[in-house]
Image (cartoon, rainbow, N blue to C red; front, side, top):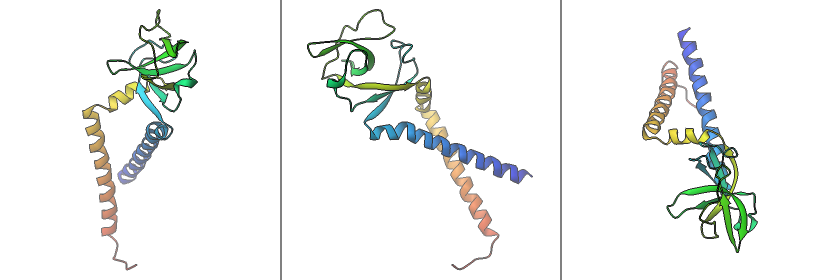
Length: 169
């Protein structure tokens, strides 16, 4: 009875790990094929459209010539940070931006030089999980658990073969 429970639990954990791995691949690797990157939203300047803690996807394949008023665009600041704000208007090839929740327009404009791409969508709260998973102790724990499951699977296969006679193939 205990053996069947352990086996069922093992299958459940394997299925869960496989599902999480596939979801992570779809969420983080597949967008890169289409020049889309993910960024964690750290402020509430774009709420309610893009919530604090969201994972925001930026399409780097959209050229600045396709940006128009109303688009949420990503651009870099002098300090190296990334900002996603809504384009208010274009003035002489420069774009005036503003966070949806901010009362005033941004003091710095978005230009061809600091433009990074257009925000295409965001997943609320997913950024919190990304930040959590990037912690060293979490990465170490995941590595140890993965190694333990691989070792347990290997030991299970070896122990099953020990009871069987050698067959020539």
